Image (cartoon, rainbow, N blue to C red; front, side, top):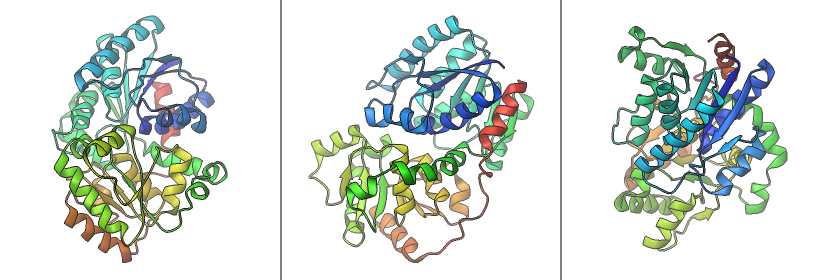
Length: 356
């Protein structure tokens, strides 16, 4: 493949794209990036491109703030026009967002090979829009790059061995990014100085099953508030979630800060006592930086983190959240175990993409 169109739109995809963009440049493969605009806050998109040294997107669709169907449909239409004009050799999508599915659908219907990085992940919860996105994207892809053996097994269980698709285990590009940018973050980030943070717990909340469910959100806030009485809790909050909180709840006792760039996030992860999140990517990032993680979900795609005792699933239960905090407060774990490769995932992926 000589020319790739990459689709990004949400924070984790920016991080993943950075690792492959660097390898594409080394390999002499032309890459053009479409930014769908799915994350609309400037702190969650523009700052990432500058910090991560990702090439500026060639195309901006600026689609956000609408329902799943409207968002995916508009993206599909916008991406299709670009693909018909650009005629790439392949379309690269990441993860499980609406941008992922729209890019994959647009390419597949134009008979352009779809390359899915972070393929084969399953939470087995069809109420999650991300689960629908990842299943459909895998099914219409030509090449599937899987981060773990579990992901490979999921695809085998679904019959992918008998389908016209190439499956590779390349490792996790998020670990590539964490290893590559950790040193840069130490120099570029001043989040710890600005906030005066020392001993703290890092929290993130963004999934719809938590933010859009009043009972779930109330329970999570209650749990974080309890923990905050003992150890300060800091939550960089998406503007959408901040608005929901402002409209429905009194201001929580724990500290809310603006969304942060990737280098600031690395420093928060490196410096915190533990992590509380409903994000798939942050669960792994916690592991990369040697921190236990409490996950505000009933299922996770990253089952190996739970199996090895690095992660506890609590859902939105205040009691389970508090119990997990008590468990991890004193627990000592060996984070040197190799679960996601050795930082070569992007390099391996691009080697295979060159051959497609």
